[in-house]
Length: 153
Length: 153
DNA sequence: CGGTATCCTATAAGATACTG
DNA sequence: CAGTATCTTATAGGATACCG
Image (cartoon, rainbow over all chains, first blue to last red; front, side, top):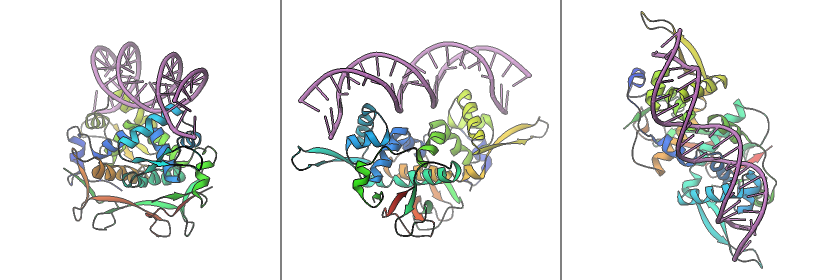
């Protein structure tokens, strides 16, 4: 796959500095290990602070800070819940925006499974058991996995 | 969408710390801003050290170190080239492994376009001009965007 | 249980200068 | 052009203790 810029590769070589793109903006939000691990856990169904801490291995301070950031960015939301006989607490759940971020994690995990093998779980389709893949289409449904993509202003 | 673990969300809540998964391993390699920007540039066709520096805005030291790391990880390879009348130099090009990482960047960029709008280029399908999106299927072609996913050892 | 507060270390990355 | 060297700053994240 190759991503073409303005139709000519040479333009990419000689052009000016590229201004902050959507990749870079998104990375500034989720480009930390703690954000990735917390989103993975949220995707797996983890909802409580303490479970996020234990299952990610991050410290409470890091989890608290990162959850707060993810909530304020709108990818997680807090939701009150109550265990019987206990007082009300906050759960952290993925928003629609957060769920739309999962293809990034799946694509990353799928690559890691192939190119950095050993250790850890795989993400598979519950119905048939096959590995989950992330693929690229355009809004109109055309497959663009061959890299027939342009960066347009 | 929700990703089920071993069929029961409760397992995810109460389970032990999750060992390093493929997502985390892959992130440890490409989870820096410099790696992301350099891979983006490589995808756009940039091949020369100086162009990587100028177009990413990273410093020479950072670019040199990160390119070296990406080469040793096998996602980039050096390739000798020669401009007429100049001496031979090294170009940095994506390997097959590196190209397979691009869906991660595109998924990240696609999310950023929708959820962190303004500024910078958009990734569009060269054929029809529509925005590029990233979605989830399993190896057998079933759509799993509904989150019918399990984490299996 | 669900955090906060401090302190500390490691790493990413910027600035600047220099080299073959 | 393609880097190396040095220094500095910013941020991520760990360790530990404490709190309603």
